[in-house]
Image 1 (tube, rainbow, N blue to C red):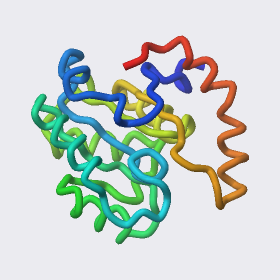
Image 2 (image 1 turned 45 degrees about the vertical axis):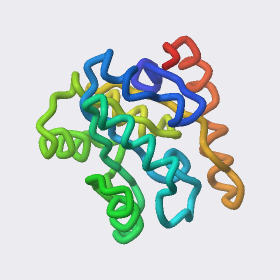
Image 3 (image 1 turned 120 degrees about the vertical axis):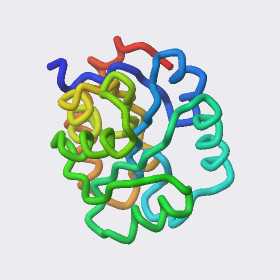
Image 4 (image 1 turned 60 degrees about the horizontal axis):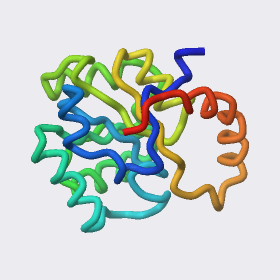
Length: 167
């Protein structure tokens, strides 16, 4: 069960501050893209997201997009707009993309966290890779019945994560 439990909870990414991550020794924040950073289909980052990225950087935390999106252009274009590195079609919850991102950024698992909206990809993958996990609420479920089913299956694990520390 622990593999499916997030270490930290937040309503959204904006509750996660560079200061809080720095206090915990985090230097790399891996972030899921769709429904974590922005709703599905939003093509480019807005000023608020760029300001959040800048807050992380002020505290020595690099942002890195780790997306399972199968369309190569989606994470590439968004990451370029945000001016951060990325790995698309990451294969989460497999460990390989987590390890590759950490190697590219020159950090250890102890210096890394992942933030995402899904238990079975972001949280499970992060726990398998030995990094801190931060579970946020999905931004928007509308438009895809499969998302409702997936999130419904995650409810018991989200409830177990409620014992996790809030950032």
